[in-house]
Length: 285
Ligand SMILES: [Zn+2]
Ligand SMILES: [Zn+2]
Image (tube, rainbow, N blue to C red; front, side, top):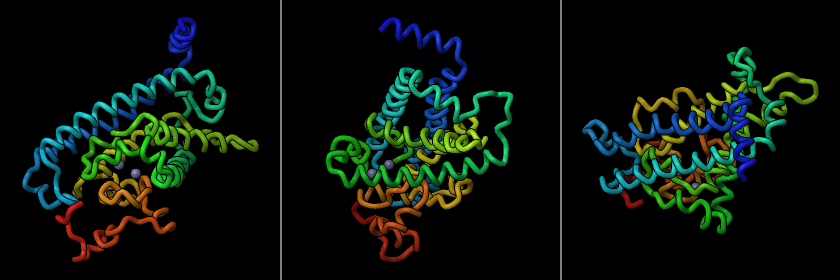
C-alpha cells in the first residue's frame, strides 16, 4: 500500500498529465457547480418579491431549503473526493489510452474549428448516453432502489441538490461526462486521422455541464439563467423539475430530444410549456 501511495506522489511530481486529470478535473467540476448552485439556492432561501411567481411549482419551506443546501454541499464534496481517489488510483491503467486520445500540451492551441465541432458533438452525444443510463436507473427496480432513490428523495429541488446522489450514481453519470470527450478524441485519432481532443476543451465542457446541472435543479425560471442562451435545444430548469415531481419521464440531461423521440416526456410537461390552463402550478406534487 505504501509503495502504491509513493508511486502516486511520484506521478504527481513528475507527470503533468496526472496532475491535470486527478486534480484539475475534480476542482473544475465542483468549482463550476458550486459557483452556480450556491447563489441560485441562496436566492430561493431569500425569496425576494420579484422571484415569487417564477417558481415552477411553488417553493419549498425554509427548513427544507436549508437541509437541501447542507446535504447538497456534503454530497458534492464527498462525491468529488471519491472521484479524485478513483482518477488517481486508476491512472496507470487508463494513461496510455488517454494520452493518445487527448492533447495535454499547453503550447498547442485549443481554440480551433475542430474544437468547436467537438464541443457541440460532446454535448449531444453525452445527452444520448445520459438518457439511456438514466432511463435504465428507472426501469431497473434494483438500480432505482439501491442507486438512484437518494436523488429522487427530493421532489421540489433547488440548485444545490445537483450532486445529491449516491457515489455509484455519481460515478455512472460523472464517468459518462468524462468518457464522452475521451471517446471522441479516441475515434478522432483512428484510421490515420489527427483530431484528438484538447484537455482544455474537456475542462470547458465539464465546467459548462456542471453549470447546467446546477441550473436545471434551481426550481424557477428567470431571464438571467444563461444555460438556455448558450446551449441550443436546452429545455430549461422546468424539464428536469418535472422529472423530480413526476419521477417518470423527462430522462434527458440537456435536451428533450430523446424523450420526445421515444415518447417518455413527463405527464403535464407539454401543458406547462404551452402555458395551458390545465397546468396547475399549485396542485400537489
Ligand atoms: Zn431520475
Ligand atoms: Zn435531478
